[in-house]
Image (cartoon, rainbow, N blue to C red; front, side, top):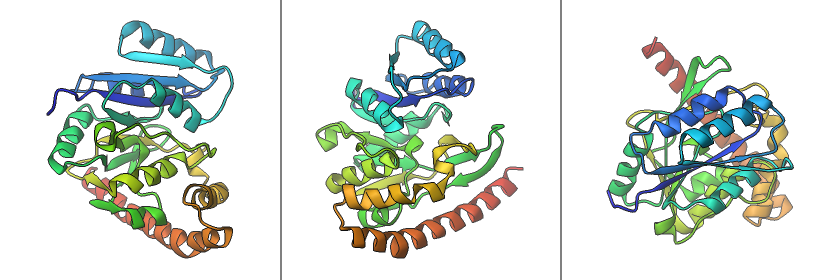
Length: 268
C-alpha cells in the first residue's frame, strides 16, 4: 500500500440519536487507522445527537464536525465534508450505518490490486432493531451503461481515489438521488466500478421513514438524474425510466430477495 493512503470518511448527520454511536465507533475502530471522519450536522434539533457529536470531537482528534444552521439535505451536508477532506480517498458512511472493522484495509488493498479509481462492496441490511434481514450484492464489475439503468452502488460502501481521478467529486445539487448522480459523474471519467465480494463490509440500516425507503416518492428525482445530470430530454428521460430503470431496478430487487433468503438461511 502506498504511503498516501489517508481516507476521508464523509458522514452527514441529522437527528441520528443513539444510532450515531455505532456509526462513529465503526469508523474510529478501523484496522486502517490513517483516516479522518468529517461529519457535517445538517441543523439537528435533537440534543442527544448534538451532545454525541461534541463528545466524539473531544475524544478523537480524527473527528471533525461542522454544524450547519439551516437544514439543506444530505447531499449538501456531504459536500461540506468533501470540501474539508484532506485524504487521497473519499469514502461514505451515513450516521445510522456501520462498517466492519476491516472495511478500509480490505477495500483499499482490493483497489490497489485492481488499480481502480472507484470501488464498492456487498453490505448487510438491518431493520430498525439492528437485526439482519438481508444482503445486497452488487455485480462484480459495474459498467457505465449498467449504472445509467439503475444505481447498483451502495453509497455506504463506495470509495473513490482522488489521485487517480485528478480531483474531488461532489454531490450534484439535486435534493435527492445525489449518490447515484455522483457515481454517474465519476463513471464519465473512470468508466467502471469494481466490487469487493469476498464478504460484506458494511451494515445498512433500513428505516421505514428513511428517504430511500419511499421508492415511489423518488420517481421525479430519478427523472431529474436523467434530465439534469445526463442531459437527456424530458421524453428520453421518461423513456429511460419506464423502459430501462424499472426493469433493471425490479431485477435488482428480485436478486436481492433471493440473495437475502440464502444469506439469512445460511447464517441462522
